[in-house]
Amino acid sequence: MTLSVDAKTRLGEFSLDVSFTSEQGVTALFGRSGSGKTSVIRMIAGLSQPDQGRIVLDGDVVMDASKGIFMPPHRRRFGYVFQEARLFPHLDVRKNLNYGRWFARKPGGSDHFDQVVDLLGIGALLERRPGKLSGGEQQRVAIGRALLSSPRLLLMDEPLAALDESRKSEVLPYLERLRDELGLPIVYVSHSVSEVARLADRVVLMKDGRIEAIGGASEVLRGSGADTREAASVLFGTVEAVDEVHRLTRVNTGAGTLLVPAEQAQVGKTVRVLVPARDVMIATTKPEGLSALNILSGTVERIDADGEGMIGVRIVCGSETILARITAFSGGMLGLTPGKAVFAAIKTAALERR
Ligand SMILES: Nc1ncnc2c1ncn2[C@@H]1O[C@H](COP(=O)(O)OP(=O)(O)OP(=O)(O)O)[C@@H](O)[C@H]1O
Image (tube, rainbow, N blue to C red):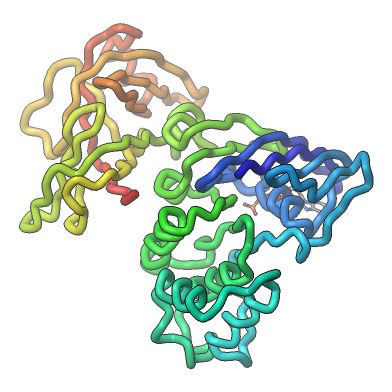
């Protein structure tokens, strides 16, 4: 599957000019509020039309401004999930889900219905109306409704943004299952580093209506997060052991072995570990008597000042690069320069299941 998007347009004062391709898996459109993410996903969906450009899915031209081609949204067969679930309040969950099937060119049979219901864990909710569901449950039903329209591509615009933290963590594993089990390409709009780190295969970083970077999640989040305060490293690793007593998981990564809070990981599974740059401390001698569980040795590769009194220090640890964000003052005190041997003490690392 290849989605190629080329679009140039003016929206009032705002000018948008983007060009990217998205392959199989999850492509995140990532960036600060107002960077243009929603505008791009709306153009892909056919809910708005750019002044210039072309949008093609696997050779099927859904929009070409120069040729006057504009396929209406329902003919594109792209599923769309919004920030709010937008379910029909007077219909129960089953009928809301069936509404999606009416839009399918070739609706799947009851097997497909059961598969989607099972994938999203909504079997017990079928007879309830949306008013009797939590926000997370409503969103899972909305995703189910989109899937039952048998889309060629799923577009999701901040599907977790309206949920509180505990609801977000309830829905996230279902999004991972979607990604891993259905093989349906997904374009996912988000401004959350942790969501992107956890879900995205490829990240399109947007700023002021332009694309600032495109690449793998680790590369883009480490290189230049949408906000440098949120920059983070994403390390891929394998679960080596789980310590249920201390609720810790030992993960082998290219940077070394890390102990990460999590008690439900499966030994042998590939996982992602998110290390926020602001939670990495740097020492020039191996620290002792420190509460941080993970201390990695490495070499400073590069130092970037952000103009706000902070520096981003890229440290090569084994085959990985970890980003630390510390004050320029501390950097000066430690005499950090490229090539210097250092220790990175990681205060918090979060396991992002894969
Ligand atoms: N129809 C429109 N007319 C005028 N300006 C618009 C229109 N649609 C969007 N904009 C402007 O375009 C800019 C980008 O908006 P957009 O919603 O795409 O950003 P975003 O990155 O998705 O932001 P958020 O995360 O807050 O949803 C904003 O400044 C917005 O005000």
